[in-house]
Length: 285
Image (tube, rainbow, N blue to C red):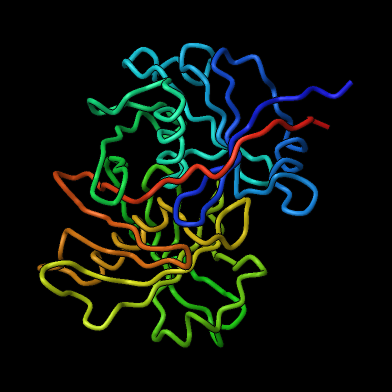
């Protein structure tokens, strides 16, 4: 007999997830089961799985538990592969914890991830996550994508997971991209990367806030309506290109909505909404 488990569907600016409560770490999901749950025709549908598990219940959460985090976000991409972090997913994760009474945001809330412990607070846009420090790669990656006449240089940015950001010349060029096929990277990063394509708003900076528009191809998923860490990486790349005097505060428009990014004391912070859509039960194949 197939095992039946509860789930909740949620999203952050259209980046959607199947949330699986497993507080005691009893559930083991195969890559095939994750892919089946995320299938948009035969499953629930989602860009990934958020397993809600206590940090002290699984080996991966040991360091997080030791640092005081009660909960660990076990994030899996739609193909079943494990990912280090998800900026939209962690806001949805905390929204779920709040709605079920498992945690409170009366004080900053630490959440364990494969990229370390991330702290969540409330913001005007909903929730804000401190993604921590970032690194900018010293050398470009060459990116080929359907809809671009020639390969373009991409800027590597790591915000706990790897990204390559490509600047395009116009809104029309961004709209003309075909991201139904994964762009090619040369050289290919060892763990792959999420790939962001960006154009500046006009003006780029207004009242001290930078503004860009972005589309993304997510590693292990495909094109998504939003990618939280990708939004942060895109803002960091444009700020890097702009040089001295570039702002520390940004808004980033994605197909699923608008997110905020700010840089403070060597950390990058991401803010945006998180929505829970419905709950139910599903049989695992």
